[in-house]
Image (cartoon, rainbow, N blue to C red; front, side, top):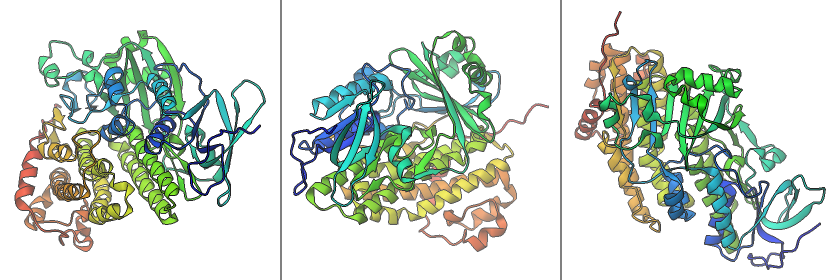
Length: 588
C-alpha cells in the first residue's frame, strides 16, 4: 500500500513525493532531528516512523543518560528543550572519577567538581525525555507514526525518490510504502542502511558493557561515614548527581541518577581484561559491582531491578554517514563512540546539524558532493578519534596520576579546541573549519604523541606523585578560563568567527604549554635522570614527546615549531604542580 501525504514538496523542481523527509526511527536522534528540521525549514513535510508506542517506560528504557556540555547545549538551545530539562531532568554535577582499591573509600583519589559548572549538563531519564519529545515534534507539524517497524529503505537513483516500507509491529502483515526526497536512518543499532550498504566499521579491540536500572537511590555520598567530614565538605553539591565512575584496570563501573528516583548502574570494560562472562547475568553483574564498590552493598541488592541489558563489542563506526544522494545516518545508526566521556549526545548534535545544513542547501540548489565529503571526513575524524583516544587508555584507567593528567589533557583539547567549533557553528562552514583545522594540525599531531606518552608512562610508572582530590574547574583556573570564554551568552547567540578564531588560537597555545608540563612530570617519574638535560634545552616540539631518549633528536623534540612562551609555561606548570604531591612511601 502506498500513502499520499497531500502536501507539495518543499523542494523546487522536484516531483511530488509523500514526504520531503522520512526519518526511520523516533528515538533521541530521530526526534531531535525532526524538531531541528522543522524549526529551520517549517515548510518541510517530515515523517518519523517509530517502533515503540507511547507511553514509553520511564527509567528502564534506553541507556545513554549522561550528557556533557556540548550535548546538553544542543538539547537545550538548538532543539529548544531548556525549560523542560530544567524542570523535569536532573542537573549533572560533572563527571566524577574514583581511583583505588583501599577499603576506606574516603581515602581514594577523587577527580571531579565541587559545584555545578556555568554551562549546564544533565542526567537524562530517556523514557520521560523521549515521551516529551514526541509531543514537541507533533507540535511542529511533523508526523509521527508509532508502533511500526521499518522493513526496508530503497534508495532511488539520481533524482528518483527514495521508498521507505514499514509495517505495524506485531499487528499483521500489511505494509505501507512512502516516497521521499531525503531519508535518514535513525534506527539505532539496527543500522538498516549501514547493513544494507555494507558500511559498518569495527574497532580493533572489543569492549563490552552491561547495565541495569534500579528503583531508588544508590547514593555515592553514603559510601563514606558522616564522621569523615573533610571528605563530605570538599564537594558542595551531592556527588549522587554526578556521572560517577569507579575505575578499575581495564574499565569502569558507573552510577548515574535518574529523575525522579532511579539509579542507572553499568559496567564498561575491555574484553581482553574482563570477558563478558564475568557479568552477563544480573547476579554476576551485582557481584562485580560490589567487589569494586563494596559500600554499595547491601543497598544494591535490596533495590528493585527494573531491567538488565548486555551489549558486546559496543563501539562501531561507518565508512560513510552522509550522501549527496540524499540519505544520511544519525545517532547509533551512524556511530557509537566509547561512552567514557558521555559524548553520545554531542555526536547526535553534530550529525543532526550537518543533515539540517545539507537539506537546507539541497532546497537552495547549492548542495555539492565536495561538501558532503567534507562533512563525512570531519564527523568521522572526530568520532573515531574520540573512541581510539579513550580506548587506548583502558589498560591504565586505574592509575590515578596518569589517567587524571590524561583527563585534564583531554578536557583542554575538548574545551579549548573542539567545543568552540560547535558553539560557533564553524564545523558547518567548510571554509571556516579548514582555517581552524590548519591551526590545529599541530594539536592533532601532539594528541597522538601524548596518548603514546601516557601509555608508555603507565607501563613504566614508579609512583612518584599522588593526590587526594582534584577539582577540574576550581583547581584549574586556566582550563576554566578557556571554558568560560567559549560559552555563548544566550541560547540564540552564535559567536562570530573572529571570536572563535581568537579563542581557538589562545587554546592551542595553552594546549602546547600543558604538553610540556605533562612531559616534565612523566620524566620525573619514569626517567628522572633525563629531567635536567631536557629542561636545559628549553622550548620543545611537543608533537615529538616520548619516553624514548634515543629517538628525541631524530624525532625533532628539540626543534620547536612555535615561539617560546616561558612565562606562560611557568604559570601553568605552577598551577598543575599544585594538584599533586610527592607520594608517601608504601608501608612494608
